[in-house]
Length: 167
Image (cartoon, rainbow, N blue to C red):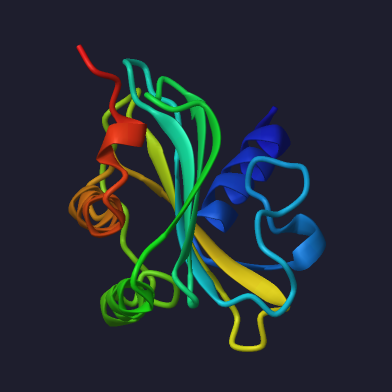
């Protein structure tokens, strides 16, 4: 029993640091990645929660392409594409680099149950791999950072109407 607890806690800890994944494993939800080798991108993926949180992927490419995938509890289901000014990619990449979210060790504090996960991603410089970090938005140390990054992605790409169902 103790061994199982150690193994499981090791798995959780491993996901709390950024990982580098090859193209073949480059879709956090399984299946074919939404990017091709050589693409430069930044992305976020919102996960489910105990309430009514949207589950989605949002990729922004250096050429201005945007790919949104609404999975659950989103206004738009499936894949949606648009084009934005490529400077928005640069701005979001700068946000990820300046916050150091994929490189620094973030001390995670106590966590509230049932909060959504946010995965933050970017391609490596050569576009052959991706870096990803999973952040529990209910945990001290992650909550503000996750909210700030997610908000910037949604607002800067102007996809709120795809994400939030109308009431």
